[in-house]
Image 1 (cartoon, rainbow, N blue to C red):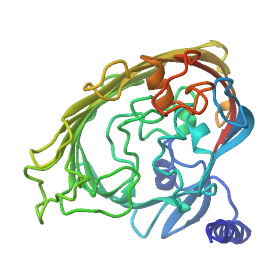
Image 2: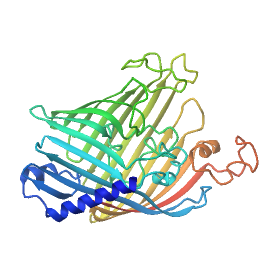
Image 3: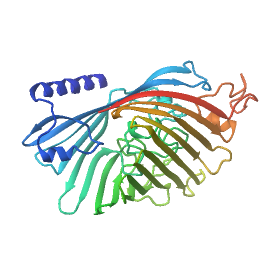
Length: 413
């Protein structure tokens, strides 16, 4: 069925292009609407009543995981093939956004974001639908505000809402995805308001069902977002935000009809991220935490997860060759000792047509606080456990580090 959806959408797009010449717009208002580089580049349809543009982002490549206990330690991969539709009808103040992924179902989750994702993916062994985003954005006149409602990525930090072809490297930060306990929630169903106080300060507020990549809610309590986005100088973006979450807990204790949960599990998830892109530099600094407080009715303990990221990239030849280095740290649970994870990522990146065609060669070195931590996080390591032994018996030959080489090609139009 999902493949049928993709085929139907493709036929519709081809039909539109047959009827209407797919060229750049000669309408200034429409040009302005689609001038943002994060919008798709191809204007497919324009009339006096509106416009629709389409985009495409494909990521494919080769991975070599010599320390992974899997049959395909080296393999070609196709993690994503996504489609985007943006536009407006009748009013330029009301814009719609749709996106879908043609690679649905189990999509080699262990390789989508590097080592560690397969064992701890929210989508593993689940039926992943073709549709990802479906949102309506209202550009409120007079007060410089935007209201988004539907399913979309909340404005919690900078990196989570950045398209996967524009992350500065192949992977998301560990604190967002790719390790046990990562706090990136990505898509949620809800409503969000962004108000431009002045030209460089935007205040953010939102209410969502909650959960990670969720479609429906499982309790009455909602998750809330408050934050601010700053753009003080050209090329510099800063986001300081916090989620206040009230999830349904494992023993069934629920919010009993309350919008704010009382006496059950509460999560405070702050994030601070800054990115500077200018003069050939790409500098990213960020960190996030998950502060979990539980009631006496929950037998599990309170804990804190936290992580941070430092990234430096510099274009050394023209605008097409960039060298970068990134350092990730992730502590999944302060209750347990020696379960932290460190990652160093380095490599060259080639931009053949700016961001629209790229080759990224990333070498990843992961180091774990203990062998047991590696076994819990990484795709099962070679000789992690003694043959035939209890799952808790770590083999003396087990390692605390892992190497990965990722060579990815991507197009983004």
